[in-house]
Image (tube, rainbow, N blue to C red; front, top):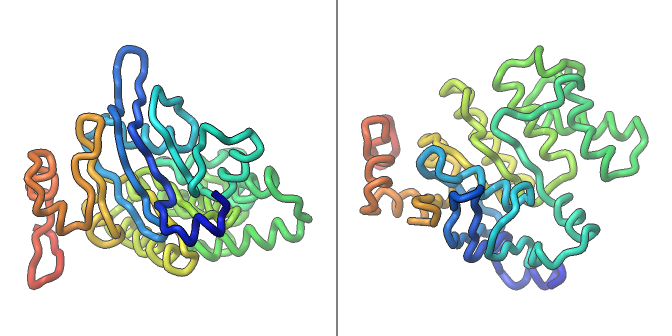
Length: 266
């Protein structure tokens, strides 16, 4: 299916079916099904160590699957040639949990890594595009020449986000993007992601455990349990769900309460 017919079809931008992933004698994902819709921020939650990040890495091709299918932009990833897969990969960006910046490179140089790999640009254009990405994520211009060791946790997240946007992706994968940030920094990062989604037309798959992110940034939420999706829907659907883990997660001591029609900390 070509890009035009895919966009007109209204199909999910990512479709996962019957996905099985495991390591040695342990099966992590057990026939998992999930659709990620074009233009949404989908939050992905679940108990620690149960495979949230495994799903992201499997979609990205970093972890092999044992069974199932993964379609991106309407294309079965198993059926693509190396060149075709490379073209698909240029249409997504990834922010790993701890940023994964190259410590020996400046912020500007980190952002330029995917540009140098995939694009044929002059040094002047590389510098200009890096500057634009830095501005886009709310960093000051002087951050361009700083090394990761000179950055705060929040600045590292923003620099890594800028690098994930280097090739103007259509899909953004975020792995625990607010972990390690204070509540103010986390809230600002959520607002930034929501703004970028609106202005750039991004589709965002966000692995998170941050309840505030689920309330304020996500259009839908999918919950993982025992290797499968146990629930998917907007926040109201998750709050009303009777699954024991969801009840504990969304109604426990650190959950939010709805006060006067707006979410607030319990």
